[in-house]
Image (cartoon, rainbow, N blue to C red):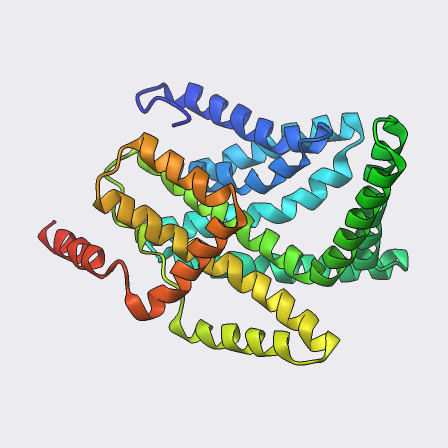
Length: 325
């Protein structure tokens, strides 16, 4: 919870502007924290939902003015301009919260928006600079792999045989990243949107526990028709054609992330149903994510839910509780 509910209105507004400006500025001006850009929609969704459209927009405007001034002073304004493409996600999620729309719809709208905006922005940048942003991004990743190997080589702590093995591993990883790069971009968008949905709902319920109108994320369910892309991706992987194999790998990675989210919803729902202590839940999540087998199991659980419906008793209880209230 960002602030105390009973705080003075003027003081709350100043704090909200300060917190939002901090979230906007830190990943822009501080090297190594760029990954925090993915949280930029969070204060937008939170403050628009808590304070309403007019006051929330004023908070965003004040925070953007501060972030722009700091970024201009530090020479990081281009980074801020790119990260601003994430902000409408906060408006989409806040609108869905206000109108009590399903989380799936808000998530799909956010993912679609970000895909279109990044494609258009990439095309405009490429046209203006006569470059290919997609290829340049891949080349920057290649340089990152080369720099990583250089660190190992220049450290002087590894014999020649180990360096050769490290170089072989990095080269193989670079090839796989190049093959899966479209899926990696799309899954990063999906994970960004999903993270903001989960954290924003958690924060809003911490502030006001009575917020139970929205569909619970523990009941997150993908369309049953999505099983057909899973089948087609599997077929593409076994067909003796490299291009089809690449398509299958990319589609499979995206579907893995989607069904992983549904599997996590099932695990969370079952742990709540069994009233497991927080410590046991934390240990369970850690064990599931510490190894690839755990991630594969959770994703398979999400896919199997199409036929087994693990949460059927839970969903029935939720409907009964809603009807009573």
